[in-house]
Image 1: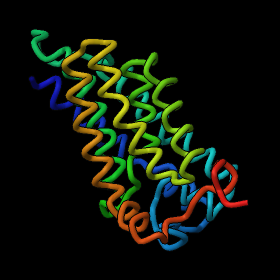
Image 2 (image 1 turned 180 degrees about the vertical axis):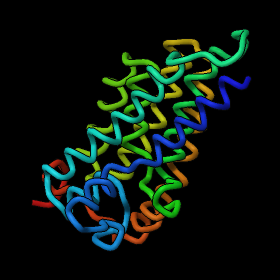
Image 3 (image 1 turned 135 degrees about the vertical axis):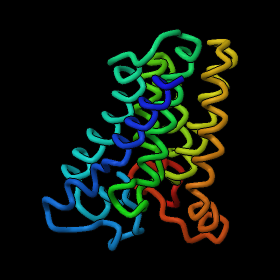
Length: 208
């Protein structure tokens, strides 16, 4: 149990290192004061450009992947393995929570999407392709990045339940789906009001 607690705490600390805010400090900007005010990759792309956003994605995806893949087995505290199946899940969850509520940045972070991609890649790499496929299809049909993210997140527990038959992964997926919907509540409100921005380049059904 102590092993799980310590590793979960470390994963949260790693999750709190936001790529957009770290790179923003180097550039002298805080993207939380620009665009949508969010510290995630989408706002980084819109306000700072493609190369900045790429760096943000590498950091945010990478910390999620490391937290789910390597951190659970990096060291061992105490004996016993009763929690060994849940340690990667706990670390993955903590990394996403750290990204959204970063202790290093006044608990004002992103929406967790990029870090969630990283932890999915770490927990079960085979789910990455179908989850990203759902994201791309929804984005092309609707033009809404937020809606695509929520639908892709919801696809993960279905994949974990039907194809992997994994209770821990299914529970993680359901929890993350609820959490991502919560972090995108502003997007939902704007979509209902008709004021949400759309990705014009990837929106195939946009008016011609």
